[in-house]
Image 1 (cartoon, rainbow, N blue to C red):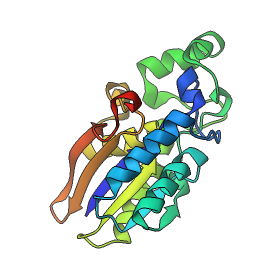
Image 2 (tube, rainbow, N blue to C red):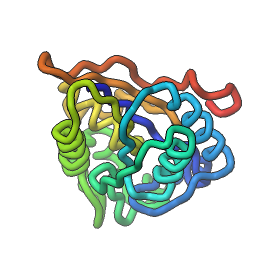
Image 3 (cartoon, one colour):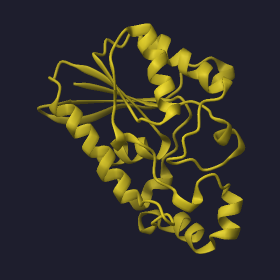
Image 4 (spheres, rainbow, N blue to C red):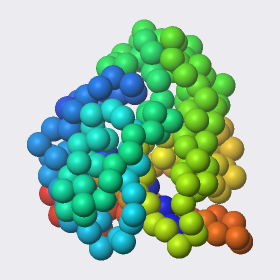
Length: 205
């Protein structure tokens, strides 16, 4: 079985450097262009289903793919981004000034942080990885599927796949509208590509 993990494109909050978790922010014009380019490439993937976080920015990517591929889209709440609670919409500098203890721990030991009135990385990893396991159970080993999610969610999925401890979370970077792929069969799971943006035009990378 083959998975295509797709991060959504740019939103105005991404552009402004604001943290976005469960806040339902839509793609901006550049993000929509990224979604359309990703959808054109997805036409050659041969997938039989599209699974997406129910947030607007991921569903917009799914809808663009469905227009091109005529493949059904299924929402999976477990694929939503980390719930940031009180940190929704703040910048890194605002986090440093207004939540200094959280900021310090997030930089040094991200696995120990519970976002104020939000979630922890462990909670995110558990629910996003469970979504992957559920999708595996619903398909045969010859299937390919697309999973459209978010920065932190995809990084925890890949981290779980590779056995990377959450304390090393910041050692991974993931570009907007990037694609990661992995395969799953009787021999286990293997990452086959990470943070691929080759499908995007230069102005959208």
